[in-house]
Image 1 (cartoon, rainbow, N blue to C red):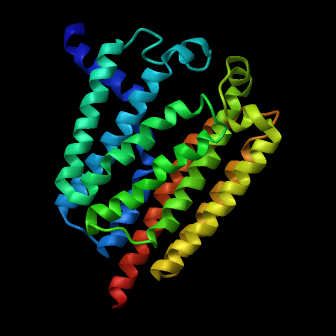
Image 2 (tube, rainbow, N blue to C red; image 1 turned 90 degrees about the vertical axis):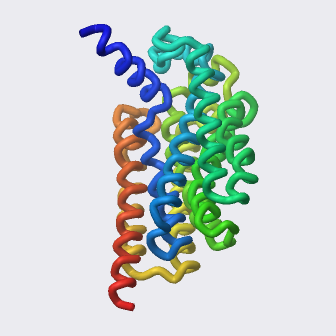
Length: 294
């Protein structure tokens, strides 16, 4: 029995390393970019390769992050149980997973169109480079935001083979939304970062000012979601989704206080998943209603 379970346990370790469940943050926005680019359903070929590109790019980014931060993770009580510092995964295996993820991403990009392939190294540079920025700038949250924000733009390019400036509204919205919740998440490590020479807004500005920046980011993100809807001429169902997203983000912000981080997991993991999935569902409903009306 133990021998039979060993491959599954190894597979679970890899899934835990890359936090596969967190793909839910950016994937719905990529699907939104895809839907708007295709004005509906782009076909199974485009859909499957876009999903493959998204998952493989994010897996590569997370694997690189775990490799680059393995010594830092080993020192941090919050992260010392991660696969590499805990000895659950060999560094060589993680590196092989990284290489395979990059290959899978490049293959997926090549199967979409020439512009997707040409820009794939840029996407990788941003996604992998984020892990290094915390060593020299407190603005690393915004680099992470950009790495997720390019998802809808990448999906647009995958469908159309070109880049429409209007998709920049959605890219900006995802960038600011991600930066806002990543600042909240970084509150947990402000003292550790200070002691070990790592940079973040909480380490630089303190918790109270960082939460203010997070709230500004989320407010601007909502404004850009409205701008995206106006740019693409969508209907009221989409804007209802923006209102729901605003309510969820307001609740998220209310859960975290400078002196109380006890509900940070609910604020970071659960609510942000609802934001991304919920907005896509409202946008999909809007597209369906407009299609029935035409």
